[in-house]
Image 1 (cartoon, rainbow, N blue to C red):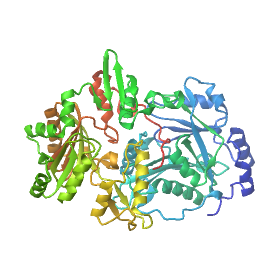
Image 2 (cartoon, rainbow, N blue to C red):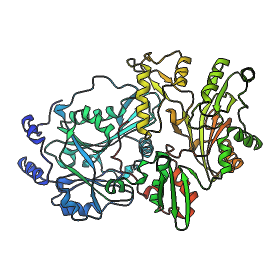
Image 3 (cartoon, one colour):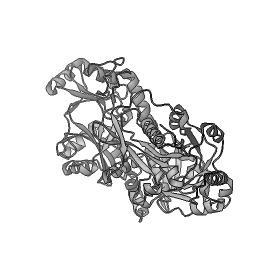
Image 4 (cartoon, one colour):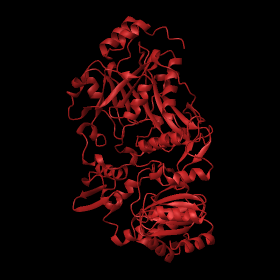
Length: 599
């Protein structure tokens, strides 16, 4: 890749490496190249503005422009050489972003030694592409893009790329890049990376790395010299990738406006910092509405919400509005079965585990069974599609580790559907798919599972992982594999039979195409249990078909991972009806999109 003639000589590059980007240095370089300066550069990215700090002639001008941040947008000023001078002009409104700036000089770059398979990278070129990117951003808690606001590329604006699965065409990653030479005639030939995001549900390895490499190689082909990025100081997963690619720290800073959603960055972690994602999503929504939050036990997910004279205790989505009787009806699966049976809802045949002879007779009657503890959650002790008496008895012994009472149910093939009902209305529906891995022809299945499990843990705040236990081993054996076998390149293999999120399962939102019969069954089940917040688990042929059996009701459904459906919003609506926001949801405070780790 031939370097651009205006770029600094390699010897001068070494001199530039330790230098902080400043207005004075930029103007001197432009003058030396007899290039006219464009003045302060502001680029609209669709989620907010990028202010290129060293194109501003004074700290007060940069501070004043930052304060023009619009509601519902997130601005950031990068390349700020003297942040203390900027903050001095508006200390109550601005703060120093706790991010590290990193730079990769392209002379240090080394191409990948292995090909990335199973997906392709291309430019965004349609409304469907933007919609897919925004679904991905929302799933990562990021602000969506309004493409109508983006500065055009011929004016130096950003370019967006996406990664799509080669089999399904699903968008599984995205990244944004800016060519500094186009944007402000950068004499150093720089570029920058923003908004890297990878679908946490994707089982394709290396998507984040491939997107970063694609951007590097694209800008190298344009004759540029380096790529910069900003990453939160504590984002170790992203920083480990960047270290591998030979990025180095750059002595410059970023400044942002203070707002409700990024207050943890300038106030420090509060008591809610230790909450899991299922409690945190509710607490964050409460904060947005000005509802007081008191955390009693972060590890247990216990907190209290107060607004005016109304006070409600919660354990994640289980709250004071759910009665003890309704909770017990959900916890005891035999009581759940009887309550839903009285409501005329379709369910598997069920009985308590008895003697080996009784269990074998029930197996013979139905051909295949499911074994689960009477009182259990998160898929613990559940075994499915058991076809021999030996498998049934072994599964019963495992289930008894979680409850002395064990139930047997007739096995029904189908897709695992979770429907979240809040206030007796369907708020979200998602197909839950069991954990799977995709072979690369090199690594053992054990290594593939461990890598996929790490990605799931990182994407869910540690809530989802694939256990290397007897159930996983049995699932592999049924498919003719063992932990140490090497899966052929491109072959998909399910490694769990249950689709529980806590054991590595993934969610696909199907709310918009949910069949009315399924929605009606979920609402009838919630009313039969007299529970205002519940997650109904069904087995269905397809989300848009009417066939179903209800297999479980959860009194404390996880509200996270159902993006873009407003589960937390509807939950807080139920608790505090007067707090319903009048503004459109897109105009609220949301996280800034450059603060995501690659998966």
